[in-house]
Length: 281
Length: 328
Image 1 (cartoon, rainbow over the protein chains, first blue to last red):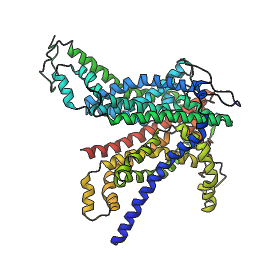
Image 2 (cartoon, rainbow over the protein chains, first blue to last red; image 1 turned 45 degrees about the vertical axis):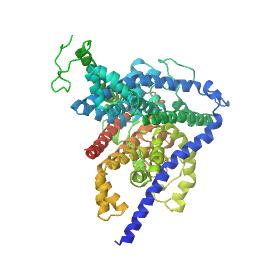
Image 3 (cartoon, one colour; image 1 turned 120 degrees about the vertical axis):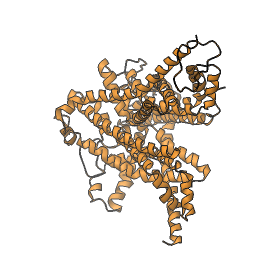
Image 4 (cartoon, rainbow over the protein chains, first blue to last red; image 1 turned 90 degrees about the vertical axis):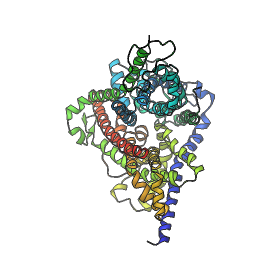
């Protein structure tokens, strides 16, 4: 091959990577464009304060679904954060111990399981034995999804804490667990908060596990033992319904959901920037 | 108060005694250790509980029909016959389609971001691609129903059928309703793209500089450097990323349920509606009234669980090999 044709090949291939980059960013822009075009007109104050209207009536809101999603996130966080942070502390502490390696690997595997599998688990584990769909079961399914995410970010953030800080605390007479909790954990806190936010953003839009657990509810309910409405479930129901008015609501709901998820993601990204100088003093 | 227990052997602070008043330091440490160990152990435990509950739920169906549950292509709820083959077939085809579309794109983006793009472009482009992973599945489904499906009906499907004259080949034959394996494959491709590209980018960045410098010093063009020095080094990690994407595609539920057409038949045409394991479960679960139907759905769930477990374990192992090697 001549030098010229080698350079030509190189130029063509490198240009193709530019094309790939452009194509890869297009879907996101398309989706956001359509969400804004179809959904923005329906985002009024009523959307956040009113209940869904019956089929055929215009207007109405998704107040119950928004509150339901917040409740589900709350339950999931109550399960996922302590377990995830605890396991992350353990992994950062033990590093290469056989159990730590196993847990790290299995946590990655758990992270890759389809969310619908966790829905089936929560259904068999929580819904069937207790005889009914419930917000609690939905929270358990989502909480199980959060655990591996929080575990791995916690571990990574704790590893960033300089060893000298730990040594200084020990030298001053802190016990090991006080060092872990009030020095190491506190220093790593901004990063851990970021990880928690990323995990919340991920589960906030989950739908599949909720089909088996929280089920959805067209009425106002905040009881943990009853089926509860959720934004993603409502979007799903409305999207596949034959009614125009419900399609409009689905777009509006999707816009709100995306806004929640993106805002959380952006906060998380912003918070990570200051992680090296954050927190401990 | 001090000296209630000897510090463990090899402890870096062995022999250092706290100066101030110490409240049962050894016991506090032990309790703390037990607590975080318990949290850590809860992860393997959770996996076991998940496996057991799915096994229990699926057992009636699996024991009733045995191996024919996997091979029978007849899924007839009214007749009480449940064969998972159409759903297994649909899962494989839609995932392969997604990989075929997403892999070259993800590789291209990753090479662009790690080797070629000017510094100021890397952050924003990487961020936009990463954000694809943050969009909920149900939003992809909504967008698919109202934007992608109409586009498939016209102009995309007619382009394949008439312009390219592929209408008579089995892959593109038959009527086109929009809701199809093709639609599911495209949406899956968009959804797994950020996962593949994130891993690929990471392993490409783990390739040592010396590898690139050596290739350039030998007179390679930039593309030859990437092809002959960078990609081979990162190969197993890239394959890991692709398999990780496969794992996502296999289990993706909502968007596929909304777009694939949900018909339990094996059709050669990509424009025909189909089913995947996940979409079958999600679509029929709320309507399932009989125990045999429910248990058959859980049987499909069990197959999905086992398959994704294996695929994920394999992918992680491959990625670990490269990223660890790169850091070392």
